[in-house]
Image 1: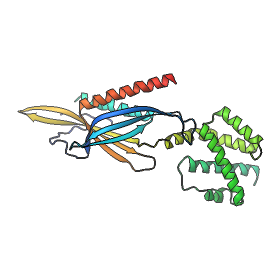
Image 2: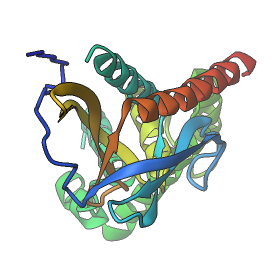
Image 3: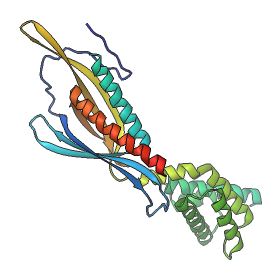
Image 4: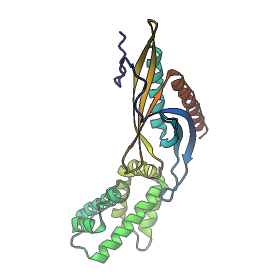
Length: 93
Length: 187
């Protein structure tokens, strides 16, 4: 038995069934945009970089949906770090 | 009111305005501020003071004034007709020094209209399958993204990834990081 733990409590489970939850999707494609908010009607000098992400998601039946969201540079760096951790955990399985 | 009381009241007013305009406390009204801070002032007097301070804060926030700009700005205000006294200018300077970063943060957040990433949770499961006595284990990452716009309820997006997909995403994220780095170095 392998026991793998990440600080997020990753679990090792025997998964006999196929992913059954209809609400879990697969990421088909991910597009990104690095932008800079220059100014707004309330702030003449925003100088605020942001990362905009567009996800193309397929649900269990193959239906496609899109979700988009924005991150600050700090949030992006955390996002990046989490995916690196995920990859390293998966690698050791 | 004594001078000291005057300035204390002014600081409280500036704080109240900031709470409402920049820190999201929409329940704070002009009437509330008057009743709490300047109960004895006339309606017109208070309104004029409130508007003046609101306008000054707006200018300071809009330009994200640094020390130099602030000094020049406030000095000009003390010199013009219907401006501020030197004591009031000092109170404004003190206030801005304490609140500048937070106000800036708030303005940046308010300018974001797309959903933000509120949280990211994940775990890795191992799928085991056996075929003719041989078992293989495949890792599957389950990711939950919590997305939400300012002041609105969160939306949860659940996704699953095999190792290949995770690495594909990682490649894109590395690309983004490269671009962020070059953005920082060219600015």
